Amino acid sequence: MTHHEKAKQGVRELLLVMGEDPEREGLIDTPARVVKAMREMTGGYDEDVAKILSVTFDSGQYDQVIVVAGISFISMCEHHLLPFSGRAAVAYLPGKGTEGYRVVGLSKIPRVVEAYARRLQLQERMTTQIADALAEHLNPRGVAVVIEAEHSCMVCRGVRKPGAKMGTSEMRGTFRERAEARAEVMQLIDRCSR
Image 1 (cartoon, helix red, strand yellow):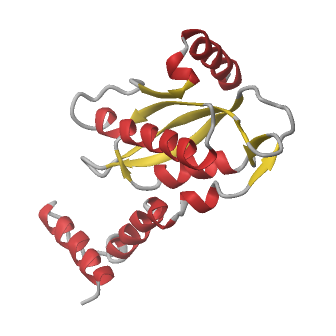
Image 2: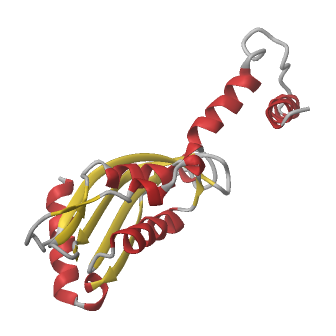
């Protein structure tokens, strides 16, 4: 039996545990649909972040903060296999290359967020992974990642608190070392996120 078939069988067993009949009309294709949906929602494992961030460009003498904010995402909580969704803001100070300051294409930042979001996750880990990736592959002078998300595991089970959001941040380089730089990037992230 393939992994795919075992996964479908597992969903079928879960339906039985719930007291459902997996052979009834509305559920007959549910195991296959669930497996397909889970594969899609965890497709980030197949993404190569190093490749996404491998192409950089000379920005000349532009050495100021670059922010991409309002990056929406849906991830999957590894504790309950329930989604959490929110928005990320990512900022960096370009590092100096041989000709000038190096920047990455605008679309690459959301692709990195998506690569990590589409995995079984903890929001805290995802925040750190995004910062780690930029720090490693762009060699910037500073990195800031801010994520705000609502977690289904708190909305539809447990404490059942719709609207409660979790915020996480990770600062590297200049943004961690210098309070004025951190304040500047946070103000810029706030303005760009509105």
